[in-house]
Image (tube, rainbow, N blue to C red):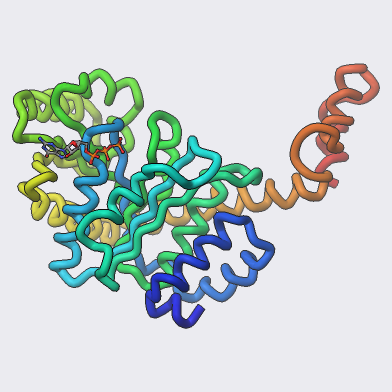
Length: 305
Ligand SMILES: Nc1nc2c(ncn2[C@@H]2O[C@H](COP(=O)(O)OP(=O)(O)OP(=O)(O)O)[C@@H](O)[C@H]2O)c(=O)[nH]1
């Protein structure tokens, strides 16, 4: 724990494993970490496969390190039952930052039975925050709901797009226009980047925004050369400052803590009624409701009593 606080990668890694394995030691660990909460700027990075998430992460780490920040990357794979294969984190690890003690990179599978992503990600973020990282980048492998979910766990959400992927339509479909604090059109060395940027700007322009609200910038990068990455990190820092002085940081974090407590409370309840899934008390009550022996209100009251 002390070594993890100093950022020792092996110690931090072991603590993340406790989360991943749903260890019974977790409540104790979380108690020990509680006083250190709230330091890290949590950045969610999301985008369709192939837009350049790992390349961008690599470039972002580089720029953040130049600014003296300690950086952790948590690559969450909600689709895979176990970590392995060429997960995002592994690919980044193969990059430029392997030997840098100011960088910690970890892939995490949401393999547990307790509720996957919603259960594990916030606690892994607490570990990395408690370990004193200045910036924690969270990314998902996979698309759709999980991306929106991860965005909900971040202070700042970056949506990555690229030309030639029908991104305008994709963006609208995936509800991505609501979740981004920053939009980055990567692969701007390719044809069509300016069009993606224009389309996105006009779609975002249609959204109503209150006075003093954050207006998400739409930036351009070529992650493979590092072009534009300085502007992205500038925008991240501007958004961080806006979050703090607008009070939105507090609102977002309270909302997250609420979700976290609720998830843990539900887990506790589920454990109490005898586990999750077939043959538990819930199953028995459900059968009784179907048979007309009891009504659902009474069954629910019995379950939580
Ligand atoms: N031309 C060009 N290619 C890029 C750029 N950024 C990334 N690429 C390439 O795009 C491909 C995909 O990049 P990755 O970083 O692996 O993409 P990813 O989004 O992490 O991929 P998934 O994990 O599958 O979602 C790789 O071949 C990169 O070299 C860029 O700015 N310009």
